[in-house]
Length: 97
Image 1 (cartoon, rainbow, N blue to C red):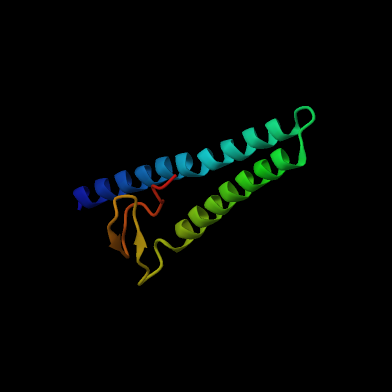
Image 2: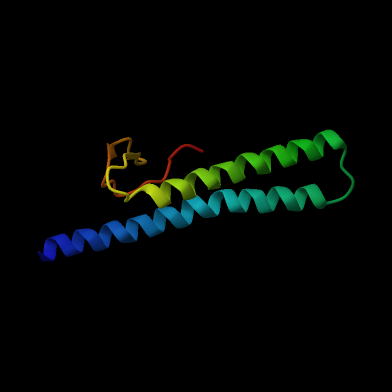
């Protein structure tokens, strides 16, 4: 029983660590891109590219948050970053960047 508790604690710690990283990375990219877009004069094409990049990162955040909300639902099969598919995966966060 102690082993199961230890495993559950490790799983939770890994999830929190992975979630922090996976959510923080696109947020940092969006913030950085927005700061650059607001600096000085930029042409329309450059601004459109920045907005497109930010949209891509926001969609990635949306995908991550949806996966996190669904990862423990009974019967769900969310792929982990290790590529396995199971209803009880230890991490639901995508590894693609």
